[in-house]
Each structure stands twice: as C-alpha cells, then as structure tokens.
Length: 182
Image 1 (cartoon, rainbow, N blue to C red):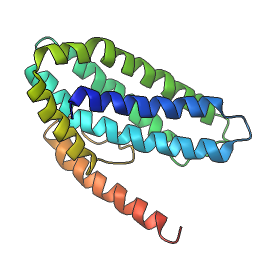
Image 2 (cartoon, helix red, strand yellow):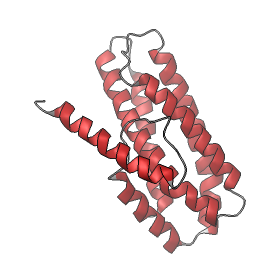
Image 3 (spheres, helix red, strand yellow):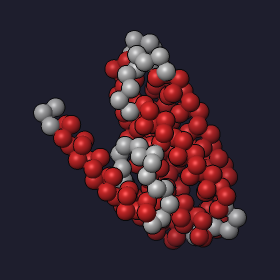
C-alpha cells in the first residue's frame, strides 16, 4: 500500500473516533471511556510507525522537509503526553473532557499540516515505487508498534526502533493479560 494512503486512512479512523466522542453526552461515560481507549491505541500505533519509518525517510529523502518532520515529532511528543494523562483517567474527572478537547485540536492541526503541506511534498519527491516500499514497511511496523503512549521513550532512530518494538511487545502482553476472562 502507498505510504500516504495508509497514513491518511489512519487519520480518517482517528477523526471518526473524535466525531463519535464529540457526539457523546455527559451520561455516556462508558462510551467516552471506550472511545478514548481506542484513540490511545490508534494514535500510539500511528505515532510510532511515523517516527520509526516515515519521518526518517522524509528527513533523508525529501529535500526541504526536515523542519516539518521535526515539528511533527514535537507535536507527537505533546500528543503522547496527553494520551498518557488520559490513560486510566475516569470520564467523570473534571479535566477529562478538556484534555480530550485539547488532544482533538492538536491532532486535527497536525493532520491538516501533514495532508496539505508534507504529504504533497513527499509525493512529489518520491516515486510510486518508493511510496509503496515505505507503505509496506509502515504496515509491517504496525504489528510490533506500541499500543500505549510512551512519552519518555526516544522518538528518533536508532533508539526508537529498539524501544518501540520492546514497548509494543510489553503493551500487547498487557492487553492479552487484561483480556483474559473477558
């Protein structure tokens, strides 16, 4: 699959979760908890694969986009902190909805910049074959990516590759243990 298509599909998935959350009422705390858990998983995986595969390719192969990729890494860092603060937080907490609102605003801004500025530059600079190679690598990386936020973990190669795979294994083991008996 084309890398940009894969990343845009992830963006659509997360935006759908955001819309569902925004439609919930004050009494829909179980639904809000479930939607935020899905946001945490989706955004954790997406951030990891971009940081491990996509941004390094952009920095090394797309002239003039290093600053954009580095800004994106910083936006990911803030998103991961918000996700870690939302993880396990009860929807009845007075700051829960405010944190989700900030998360949604930040991610929507990030997605808009990527889709309007970065992705067109990447598409122009890299051919269809290279975008397909990166897309295949992104798809493969999803299988080992962390499913929970790790804001203190490195976000650039080579350390993020090792830590990401290890964190992904630990996250998936925690999920498996948490789902035993459910």
